[in-house]
Image (cartoon, rainbow, N blue to C red):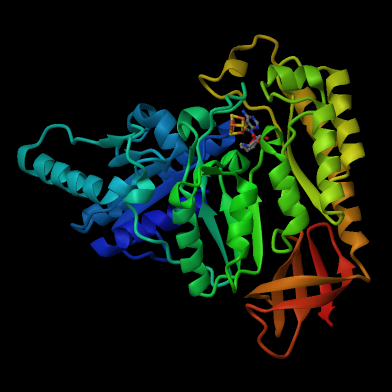
Length: 441
Ligand code: SAH
Ligand code: SF4
């Protein structure tokens, strides 16, 4: 979603004369769009700011300026801390206020002028409220940088309050964009030649957008079927979904809609019911298995991806073994796994029984070894088979092209003619842990 948001910030600033540039050192403005989900993600922001500081000073020594802004969830959660630790930052904004960037830039410029003329302390612009009006009503229609595949935010924020997670505090309350707005944005992309759209949301399947002409609220399944009607759109994906919000309509859509890719990111976090309860995930391992079974019945070729947290406070060996057992049962095609990272202000951070770092490291390694084995086995299961690949990029070697399979695997082929933008059948000849090689049928 940060990729989508960064593109929208660029779109918002384009009418004001700003253009993207390749390197920061001679930029008029640098915006760091940040993530607060784990501690190392937010620490990266302060390291990056340390790199931009001398660039800003060098520009100032030449009589030019560099406006330095911190956007995104670290801005939202740690605005005052950023100003304290990095006082050279001019603007701090949250994920819901970036439509106001042009106005913030004007204010930052005025503040600089005032300081030069009158001295004293320079005012910093901090905009981290959750405005009543939606930013989507104020940002220009997007233009895609990638010619083949695009992201489209349809839902934002979260009301689930998992006890480990900062999202409800940084992105704000759950919100769904109206169906007509989503369809119009998708249509614009398709008119530009986009063939694959990934619908985005912190909990994308909690989507409940206002339907067209008073048709009530629509769920994600109905929205996918509507988008599938767009000629020229070949693939639909969505992420990230929550097990609690998988409903029958969405499961049916996976069975009925060819364009909906048979690859689902459905995070479970843990296989232990006791940990799931303390995480406030609102489902059991058993319920997760049922959902997986129902989806496999609806779409037998579906494959799954998940997120896992190891070392949640209080997690014991038995809880961890339950996670390993869940992984063995589901058999994932891909996964993301993390050590629990206490986030300030979240309930789990206050639990006294934190798991020692050494145990987290050990569990993460065991889990990742298993998940990697499954990923390699899944990739290898495609060798000798023919699978459709949408080609997006040129590879590093001569005549090499890179595309994506239905399962998001990168697929390399050699071909003498240009196949960018083509959806072609590829016979898979080799599989590594992260990518496949093949030849065009
Ligand atoms: N809405 C999605 C997840 C969004 S956050 C869901 O409910 O599944 C993306 C992932 O970051 C989560 O799935 C989780 O695995 C990880 N994550 C979130 N907070 C974390 C924390 N405090 N420590 C470690 N990992 C975390
Ligand atoms: Fe965070 Fe996802 Fe839980 Fe919402 S549902 S609080 S985004 S982990």
